[in-house]
Every structure is written in C-alpha cells, then in structure tokens.
Length: 121
Image 1 (cartoon, helix red, strand yellow):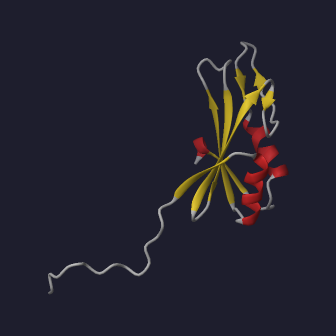
Image 2 (tube, one colour):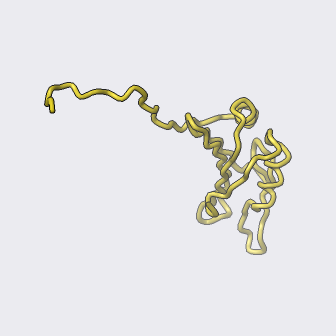
C-alpha cells in the first residue's frame, strides 16, 4: 500500500447544512413553495416570567439548509403571522399549539405538509 500524500478526495463532498434566517413571513412561505417543503417544525418559546415575551420559531428542514423564521409578540398577537396570544387566569401569556397548527394548515403551501412541534419529535 502506498503511503503517499495527499490522500484521495471523494468525488462528492456534501455541503454543510446551513441555517438561514428568514426575516418576513412572505419570504418564508415563498421559500416553502419554491422548495416544495414536505414538513415544518415549530417551537413556541416563552420567557420567564411568561407575561413578558412569547415568540414562535418556524423551521423548514430542507436538504440544503434549514430556513428559520421567528415571529414575536406585539400586543395580543404575533407581529407578522397575527396568531393570537392567549392569557391564562394568572396573567401568563401563551401561544396555543392548535392555533399554530390551524394557521399553518391554512397559510402554508402544500396540502400534505407535515407539521411537527419541536417537543413532540
């Protein structure tokens, strides 16, 4: 066996998967349509205490990259998607999973889009 250098390089080196932040809801849905996204993952984030900040992170996991969109609270709804922010009897604000799923089924392209909560994967 030859111990010569350099070692052979494989013909195809897969690119590193990148995370790309998408700034607007419109751009996010456009990318989903263009790339024919098959699934979407959502993460509901709350700060402590929950009265202060509630946000929603949406992730399109595609072969070449994952596209990430984050929407923040503004009043009683999210700024760009307008998903309602609910409040429990103690005053803690939260986003309901069913509101997110209903919104995504209605607004995202593709009838067979699979919707996953980050916490249930």
